[in-house]
Length: 455
Image (cartoon, rainbow, N blue to C red; front, side, top):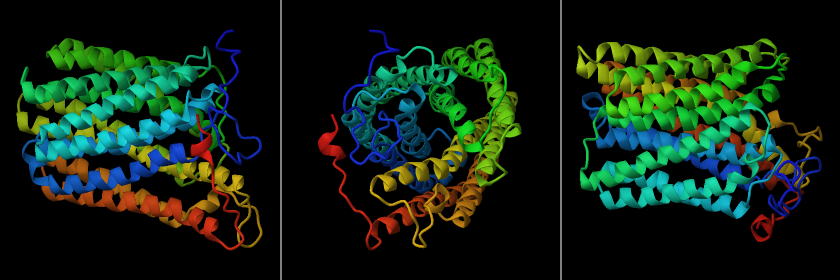
């Protein structure tokens, strides 16, 4: 029996009280929501680490204290949110369930441990803690590969599935880089200089996080913007091939100090970034939903992508003549590229989380507001606070970029403080209304039996 006709594994997405019409492969709400909630907490930790490491950031952006803040950003915030998106949307895109809900929960716990132990170990220079965190992170990567291999093995399904396959490979390569670097902290086999660290960063930022966003967004934009782009949409295919193709040259070029190879990789990656931006513009052009806050998040996210590319080019042109200024611009570029993903993650969370919670509330018999009118996605969070969150996260990214680029410690601290407030506001705003509905008198509070029925 081929993968196209194989039936879904029984109970692969066990969810008692699943609302009618919801695909059976979608995992219980607690799976993606666990990752997304932890991502908000990770943003708080990232902000606090930036405040603490502000003085180190203007002197040496590769200092252990700054590396700790970066890992809170990359692992505990961005990767945590992206993992939640993968667990939620891979079954939707492929129409096949994950291998096991229990594997999903084990992945979450393992990644949570690794994402927090690694930066704590870096910050305190405790190599045993770093190694333990690295082991948990490696375990989480292994569990994810096993879990998503079944749905992603389905043939066809277009550019998003191809992109997710490449992204999982990028995740594995990122982890392999990390394991080698963690071991080297004791063995000192080689010098962990700036270009060596950037080789690791380029894979994680673009071949893992960026490519996952590019792939998933090709399904999210049509749904959330009500956009139907005519034609064959070659830009999506170009993006999902150019991202890994560019990184395949850029990363070893940086690692080995081969400037020509790094430039070739950067050029191919730039083509992929351009294709992604073109696809976004086409979805915006053909949207049938009027301009709203979500669209503002999407466009602002793209602006940070352009800013990151400009800062990276400026860094390359500067670092040969003014080393410290060039290194500062590199750090600012990494911050801007991270801002591209962070603003997109926060913006889409205001669509994805209400969608998941709405389904969960329906499964418990809650489908109306207090006034008796139907409960809608948009009723599950305060839109005024969402606007505040947009201002906070945008200002936070701008402050951190400015702080690193101009070596201004107070700007880095301000950006970190804004991230702390952003993480707290997102968590509170997206959870307050569903919690109130669940605790309202007369609400159906059936206890979910996900854990007991999940395979």
